[in-house]
Image 1: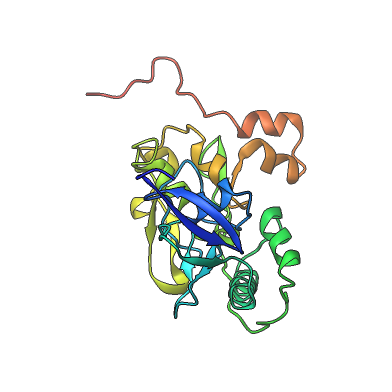
Image 2: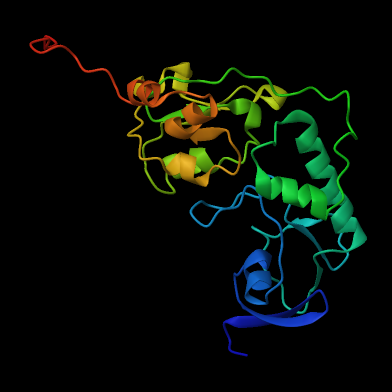
Length: 237
């Protein structure tokens, strides 16, 4: 062990990690799987979804592994009953309020943690019309789990475009453009990075969505091309 490394125990296994490494990073290096939803290698970890929580030294509060740093000589448990119960409840609450039909990784977690998909039958569902305001992708926030990945990758983590933000509070919180302007009027450059990091079907390429709707090849061609201005039509400056 060097001066810039520490040792800890994860699920009974001695692990050596660099100082400052997160519990998630240390676990992965040791071949120990910890589930994630909001975390992505391309974005800054925020510990939002809490699906990656682990038990550190039996502490009062479970720690989000994506942001909690490794501590020397600590005992970490990633799948004890306390942790499993927490993850199961988070999945059940997500399933009760969000459409997860197109989130296969989260569905696999539901199975892995024996989550009850009918535990909260009276929960308020997230409702939103599909936003189709550009030729490249659609936004269906009924499927959004508010992981922030799209907002982050559009901002300082990658694109520095800042086309996406968050609006409202509590259950009404949702991803949006500033002042709800259309995507074509926003700073969006249609790089597609937000679609690429979305863990559900909330952001989807227009072609894929159109095929799901049964569009013909001609409809796909028409709907995925931006209308051009007539020749000679120029704006006055």
